[in-house]
Amino acid sequence: MPANSNGAWNIQGLLQYDFDKDNALSFSVARKTRFATIKDRYSYRFGTAIPNPDLKAEDALNYDLTYHTLLASKLSIEASGFYSKINNSIQNVNNVQFNSATNTSVSQVQNVGRAEYYGAELALGYTISTQFQVNANYTHIVRNNLSAPQIYFTDVPKDKVFASLEFKPISKLYILASEEYDSKRFSTSYGTVSGAFYLTNAKAHLSLAKGFSVEGGVNNLFDRNYTLVEGYPEEGRNYFANIIYNY
Image (cartoon, rainbow, N blue to C red; front, side, top):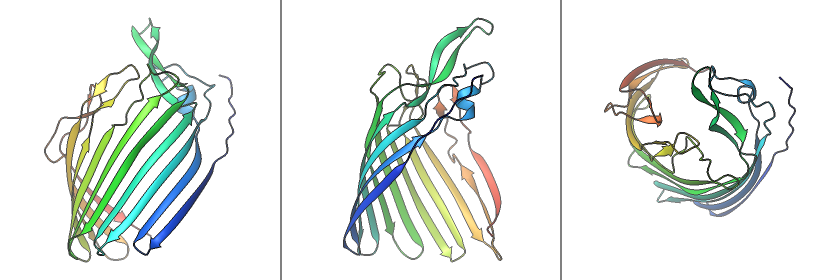
């Protein structure tokens, strides 16, 4: 297949004003680039896709306004609004061609044109005591395909909530329980939807001597049936144990 050459430049800057030690307002602008991978350009994906060696780099101009405050040395609040303008957006497009040999429609990773993303985030952290810490985060994002509205952006929910409670009975042990909510999302470029879901996870982490630690827990505690891509169920309740060494 033909070779492909891409070049790009990135730049970013931030202006921050500290009202006092507990309150700050910042505004940032950044130009970022995402190059297509070798897999994006050349893979047939086991006969389900058409290669696209001529993919151009995706570039985005990102704006972010963030306010951070700390109340009574216990409650941390961070609120952000963001806007991104994207050119040459890279997206997997379904049903671009019919493969008569396999009797299936195949996809292709393409530059689908101009897009805009905008939304807001809110993060809260509260120290209940020396042993208990609560954290929560909410993100709302809207993604519009300006060049080809009939092609839907996939894999990202419009709303996402994450909350956790950490219990630290002793200095070397913490127990973390978390709850996550994802709203529905598009899982194909032509509009197939994967439904909303909740997930509950829990784990315990114990620090040992000389950089070693162990942890264990359970994901999807209530064994919920959920999908990130419609038709492909994710794991049910599953357990894990890890040995970690930091050097």
